Every structure is written in structure tokens, then in C-alpha cells.
Length: 158
Image 1 (tube, rainbow, N blue to C red):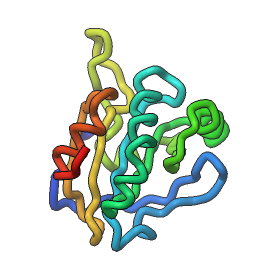
Image 2: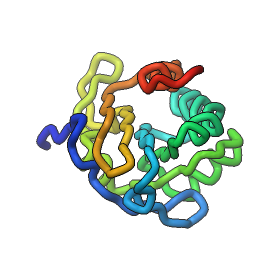
Image 3: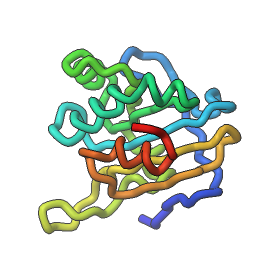
């Protein structure tokens, strides 16, 4: 598997994915807004829950600053619906079961887990600008504290 990591200035690969409630979201349909796209390994795991709750807690202020947030995992929509319900999440949860979008963003591949090299979802965050170009590409981000760091990186008050 080649390293297809994205860098600032690259065009963001477009995608259409199904949400937890069966709707479809297309990245290019959000042109004109800045979009934070983040990839996480699995719904309802401790780190992914902390990260999703952090984004949910910041969602209103991020939207007020002109950002939409999309969360993508390989989970099926039914699992994502349980995740939303269990943790009162308000951000769109998108399902990428065949990992096509993750591969396009370089967010799936070899990673270190408990000292071993494994294939899996690489926790990653991207900020896409209004014209569809990558503004920020962050790989191997931490589940906790990441939203606060991202807000600082984007110059947003916490």
C-alpha cells in the first residue's frame, strides 16, 4: 500500500458517504464552507468517544466560525446510530466500511499499536478550505486534547 498522505494545498479527494441516519453527505456539496474531516478507528471505544464528545462540545462554536465537521469511521450506519444515541453526538457520523475514503486521505495503513505494526485506521484530521483544497493535514493525532489543539492551530478562541 503506497503512502498517499495529503499535504496543504492538495485538492481534497471528494466523497459521498452514508450517515448514521441513512442520509448521504458529499464533500463537494459543502463548498463555500471550511470543513473539518476527521477519521477515527471505531465507534464506542474510549478514545474515539472522547474525541467525538470533544468535537460535539465544540460544534456550535466551530460552525459559528464557518466550519462544518464530518466524522468518518469504518463502522456501519447502524453502529454509528447507536454511538450517536449513547453519547448524544450532534456531528455527522459517516460510514466508510470499505475504507475507500480513508485510503484516499492516507488515513488507513500501517500504524503502531501497543508496540506492534498493524494495518488500521490512522487517527487523522483535515481542514478543507472553501474551494476544496487541503488547508491542514494532521496524521496520528491524539484522541484527547486534539480539538483544543486544532482550535489553537486555526486561531480560534477556546
